[in-house]
Amino acid sequence: MMKKILTVLVFFMAAAAVFPVLFLVCGSLMGNTELSQILLPVLGDGEGFASWKLMPLYPTFSHYVELLLDSPEFFVMFWNSVKITALTLTGQMLVGTPAAWGFARYRFPGKKLLFTIYIALMMMPFQVMMLSNYLVLDQTGLLDTLTGIVLPAAFSTFPVFLMYRFFQGLPEAVIDSARIDGAGEWKIFFSIGIPLGSPGMISALVLGFLEYWNLIEQPMAFLKTKEKWPLSLYLPNIGTEQAGRAFAASVLALLPAVLVFLAGQDYLEQGIVSTAVKE
Amino acid sequence: MAIHKITKKREYKGLLFLLPSFLGVGLFWVIPYGDVIRRSFFSAVSGEFTGLKNYRTVFENQAFRLAAGNTLKFFCICIPLLVGLSLLIAVLLTRRKKSMHILKSMFLLPMAIPVASVVLLWKVLFHSQGILNHLLELLSVHGPDWMNTDASFFVLVVSYLWRNLGYDIVLWVAGLGAIPAALYEVARVDGAGEWKCFIKITVPNLLPSLFTIVVLSLLNGFKVFREAWLVAGDYPQESMYLLQHLFNNWYRDLSLDKMAAAAVVTGSVILVLILILQKAWEGGEGI
Image 1 (cartoon, rainbow over the protein chains, first blue to last red):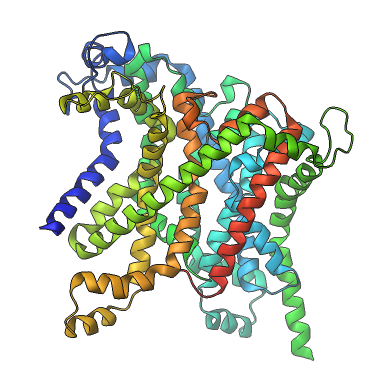
Image 2 (tube, helix red, strand yellow):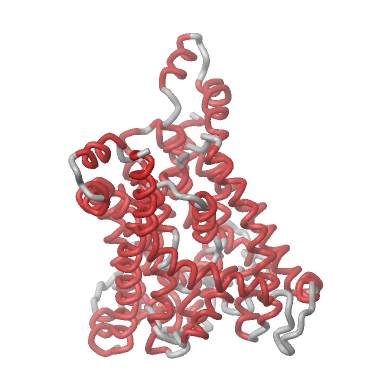
């Protein structure tokens, strides 16, 4: 009996976890009249309470059409988000993959201390690093540029740590036999490390995508010009009087992240777990 | 001798792999943070050495005390809730192999939902005339004005639990999976009931994971600021005013010396936690 109650509770909570997506999709398909009818107490100064429905009564794509056809600023910011995410992840792969390989496969003096610094940096909340981040961007003239957001993020130490965990799990024997066959260090990295360690790289990409697509603190602090903002800062600025448009924009913003999530869920889980397993 | 030489050469090549990363990390993270530590001992206006004065100012600052207290309270309430709840769900999930995958996906999905997208829902849900109070009204309970009273703290808790539950569930499921099934079989043969198995086998075997999960949950907790800030802005209701808001507001006022001192204090506290975590990892513990 107890078990049944608990199971029902778990299903209920799982439903609550995904409810926001359904809520947004449903709201984005409602016409203005319908939306204002049920949300009036929240949006304006209506009496009573806001309510909700499971399905729109008269589904319409008008908000999407409106958003895609006559809000050029939406495109600009969507594109900014794409640029920030894509460039950051590319940088992380280019710099981070060899670094992770170096940490996983070689011994050198000071390695332990350096690795500790990497771990500490990856776990520091943004607010602790905010001032130092500002000082660099100020001195290099990168404040208020997308480069100023992308460059420090590309040198984030989290993907290095994550890929390190995967590279470390590779069997030593394979690498040794390649060495005996006369393969150079770079050849070993490219022809053994990268193919065998690719799950780690994909994990880092999936987790990174969700992080940088959702970037808020950095652009908020370092980007003054609105035209450079990513989608994550634009959405809350759509006034409540344009509720329909806000719903449609929210759905379009979460779409890429949800697609990446669905395609890469196994890698995401592997990534989460490997942050926590012992070395 | 010859072998020794080869290893030496290999080590040097290893550094080549790491060089670009070292340069970038040093330039963008380590050196500037060192500069912040230096600045924390100087006045931002006159550039004079002021010793611990900035630190004193920070600790005496009303806003800092409020924010630090709230942040602490937030973690003290949320972490046990999150860790306990996720363990319970993880245990139930491992019993239901068939629905486990879909349920895990459902709990993980919030990780993928951009904060900016849920802001709209939060506003409609927690408004004084919003959906949540509508539901409460149906139960004849008069709900508070969530965003503008002390109840706003609850909004933080919900945001945090909602977003992080899946993450912790995945960690627990991994921890549970690492417990040898043979242990349970032996216990069952000896006539141990389900509850007894849980207390005698599951709990002791999960203890090492517990610490890692607590620290990771804590570090993820700082991100709750995103929801708080997007929903309630720079100066939210007092009970949800976190350290992150304070940093943000000092940054806007360009109170660089206070910020530097606070960054060093907060950074040190977190560093200690991370070092303990690393010790735990090295001790062969963890999941």
